[in-house]
Image 1 (cartoon, protein in one colour):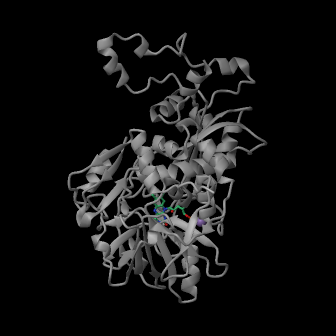
Image 2 (cartoon, protein in one colour):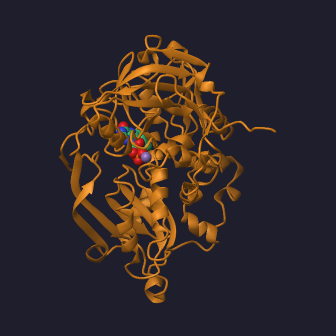
Image 3 (tube, helix red, strand yellow):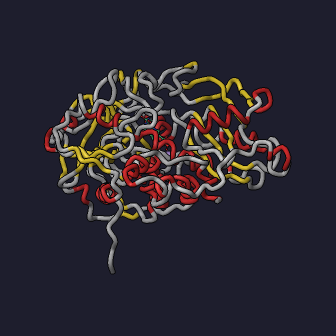
Length: 485
Ligand SMILES: Cc1cc2nc3c(=O)[nH]c(=O)nc-3n(C[C@H](O)[C@H](O)[C@H](O)COP(=O)(O)O)c2cc1C
Ligand SMILES: [Mn+2]
């Protein structure tokens, strides 16, 4: 029997390299003062830092954008969200294994020092280095059900970090431990195939194991191994694992931190800490740095699963609309729904569902037709400018529960407490054309296009102009229109 190599960060680096999407950085880089600037600049390509303090290498901006995410899922940008939405419904249970590369090196308390990891400081006002790439495994103490999610971990010493627990599943688990006055065991893995990260960023039902979602995304069962000092399981093919406990009823100042919406202060305050008991790594472990900020790597992990979860929800609204695509917008509080309405008002029905899914983020929901490129914000503004009668097509819902990290809204309570929330409003913008069923009204908003959309400039350009033409961004006639011709 032949066993294929499991998907891990090594196979992902090879995929990026082969696709011409990886830039090697061989000069020394200081994570505390330099790495954040380099990550911030690299919006197109992944970076492999090969010369970091204490002999570390590290991968960052991988995925740097939705194009990279499509590469990780083995599909195209256009097909990505519908495909992830389908895979989200396929759960593959993990398997327990004994051969675990992540156990090559085992360091007990006193033998490791978190300040020697190449953890970077992302932005000018950040309180210090923060692990942004740690996926936190915890369990519900009543049922033993596992949860995996992202949590920022501000380094506070050789074996201590802060942790921001947004009121969702890990917080719920922690609250149960805290009510028993017991510490919550956690295991944190750093560095793996990006579909593990996509699974951890998927908000599903409480009690659903994100490793089963990861198995569905990967098309193979996740290989798990037992931890050394806590009663939890972690992926055998990760690069680094940290084990420890979150003590009950204990808080310390944490933040500010460069966050996903491009602001520093959200979440800052008295937050819990993690006390670490063990670190295990691969023999030649590669670290993973992950920078947040609008349109940075962190946003890609928000965008893809969130768009897919909303797509999955919308596809059955009202008995099966003509839904084409869904994409979360920069800043992560907006979402665009691409559809062909069957009836007047149907777009608003879908927008209401988009604003109330598994995810708390969406505050702005916009519906557009398939002739609008949803990956290009200029196209969205065009649709809003030319297809919206504000009095008819814009609806504001006041007094809603919004995302607690939405800095422009009123904050109630404080991070680390049960009342923490933002109280605000939501907006729907129907920027679709009249439905095709009303042929005349539909035709009045037919978008111009040239006679022939499969002609390519490069087939006509002179030889000495070819390099110029090839370096141009893809000319947009509407990607769907190009395919129709
Ligand atoms: C890059 C990134 C960073 C995140 N950082 C945090 C964080 O610091 N704290 C937090 O509570 N959630 C954070 N999240 C959100 C959760 O990990 C994510 O929404 C996940 O789906 C929540 O898991 P749950 O539904 O199992 O609670 C982050 C998400 C991403 C994509
Ligand atoms: Mn969960």
